[in-house]
Structures are given as C-alpha cells and as structure tokens.
Length: 289
Image 1: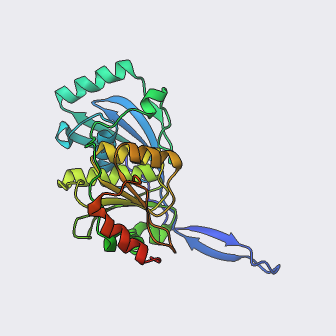
Image 2: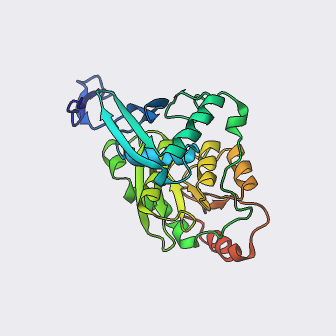
Image 3: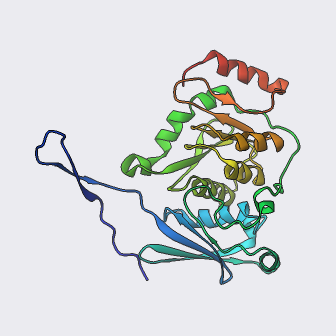
C-alpha cells in the first residue's frame, strides 16, 4: 500500500497584532510517521520518526540495541509504507535470529517508542544502565580544534531538510580530515544518530576515526549509542545532561559541547591526555565559534 501524496506545504493564518486581517502563508513541515520494526516477522518496537533513510535507521537501531553485532547479520530490510506508518521487517541470519529470540524470551521489549528520550518501553533499570559491548578502557585522541570550531556551520550546511521544513535534529559523521561524510536528519535526536551510525556501517566507514556530531542536547541514551558503536568523540550543539557526562567519563567517551557564542567545552576527565593538551589550548584561545 503506497503512501498518499503529501502536500508540499500547509496553509496557516497568523495575526498581525494590529486588529487587521490575519496574514496567510504556506509552510512545509517536517514529516513524521510511526515506524514499526520487526525481525523475521516478529514485532519488536515502534518509534515515531522521519520516514526517510529507513534502511540506515534499521541497521543503526539494530546495532545500537545489540540485536546484531555486524551489519552483515542483516540480510535484507523490507519497507512497507502506509498513510501514517511504515513497517520495517529486517531479515536476520540464522545465528542472529536465534540470539534475538533467546534475548526476547528473557527480556520482553515490544516498545511503543517516541521522538523524545529514546528509552520508552524499557522495563528494567538493568536495561538502562547495561554496559556497552565495545569499551576500549581509554580515551581516544580529540579531533583537531579547527574541526570542532567549524562544527556549527558544518551542521547548518549539511541539514538540507531542516532548512526547508525546520523541526529536525541532525547527526553528521566528520572524518579525520574534517569532511562531513554522512548527514541524517530526524524528528528524534536518537533516531538521527541511529541513521548516521547505520549509514556509516553500510558504507564501511570506521567511526573510530573522526567523530560524530549532533545538533541537539546530549542525554544518556546518545552516550550509550556512541559507546556501543566504538565512537571516540561525540560533539553536540547543546549542553549535555549530568548523567550523560558521568557515563561518558565512565566509558572514556570524549563528550564536547559547542556553544553558539563561546569556546567548545570538553567534558572528558579532568586528567587531560598529554596528546590532547594542544587541542584544548587552541580551543581556549578561540572564544567564539
């Protein structure tokens, strides 16, 4: 069943404030649908998400949830579009599907998700605070200061959909040379991160080199996604929460906040790696972004 044609924009009326006739306009809005994910026909989760780059989303979500450990374990993703919903049925190989069914028997998580915190449907605290499978035990080197200082403008350029419809979070992968290799957008910030991780995995891009940046604030769930996929540095345009910083430090993730008017803030351990000191010094010498 194909999705019906969506209007290119929605008419709105805006008061002038002077008692005159209201202004009229036409605004393109961010698209949002209920996206259901199943594995070999078994329903698993429903999230509210933007209905684009959905194969990237399925791959990234599956990696971040620990359903698969490698993209090669996903043999196919079938996408079916409806009016306000999309069904994604991922086909796992035999071993991954067996492990999925075993985990499903022990932990029931058919999750009615949302575009908010990314933890809807979690039934036990152990699931929230489970350790990541990828943990190097040490910090990786920070990206060059110039790459972090250019981040806000880089994200603005990369987010093409937001420039026309607004209301979309963005996530980008910046390689070791400072180039934006992948950008994905979504109404949910964790969905945008899932999509960019999935896109990198499908393209064979190593996220241990370079860094991932997001346009929104950083919460615990984004730190967990980053550490589970071996990301060394996560940069954000909005302040992280306290629990995000504490868990980033626990699992040696470089967490960097890039404010609009002041120098980037590196929320790593107080014990700065000697190799990173020149980067910190350069950031402190350049107080505006």
